[in-house]
Amino acid sequence: MQREYSLARLAGRWIRSLALAAVAGSALGVAQAASDQPLKLGSTAAFMPVLEVAAAEAAKQGVAVELVEFSDWKTPNVTLAQGDIDANYYQHIPFLTNANKEGGFDLKPVAPGVINNIGLYSKKYRSLDELPVGAKVAIAGDAVNGARGLQLLEKAGLIKLKPGTGFETTVADIVENPKQIRIIELEAVQLARALDDVDLAQGMPHYLKLAGTIDPESALIFDGQDRKIYAIQFVTRPEGQNDERLRRFIKVYQSSPVVRAALDRTQGKLYTPGWEE
Image (cartoon, rainbow, N blue to C red; front, side):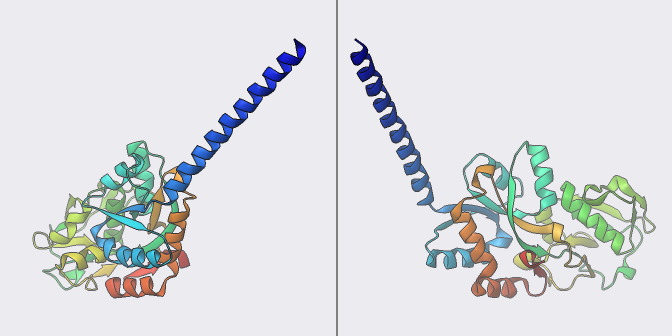
């Protein structure tokens, strides 16, 4: 009886070992299958021309990339959190921090891309001094980019803000407004089209170039290129941070001379490589 029991126990262990091996093999197969799939990377129109160049360069190195274009700044994070894409590239850290808080996401930055300047633009005036009392000024309506626009208005001497609010600044933090400018908050992607309707507008050169509404280099004032916190980030879910496809694509984006030439061609001098800061 003892021998029979031992044989039965050994047989059970053998069966369990086979089962565990099968599970491990299955998991390995799933991981391998995932790595064989194209990297799905979401972005917005302004970033697509350079990402398309980077995807073509990555393909030469065996990394397949499927680009997914979005027309707004909310859906890319929702889609990523739901697992329908593997990563996105369109936002900086303050925007991501706010999106995680508002959406209940746990999205993670993986590596920086470019730092884009923003500026104040006008089709009606050639200098900030010409701006009349009561001028209509458009800035981004989202919490973070709106704060950046307000800080730029302060740099231009048009308003004074309560100190210490940083990228959480809102219109409620304006403590001085000597020209009584009327601030209009719009969705950031609409700012490029608003220049005909306002006296001054916050603008992002890459979107202005895409829209063709004004020369992106004609800003009356820029916010500077040393704002590393505003570097556009490659973002993914926690489990995707070590995705080899994403890591290899980022390396191509950051190091390929062909990609750098595309950045220079599309953005001129109005960007800084965030990974070199």
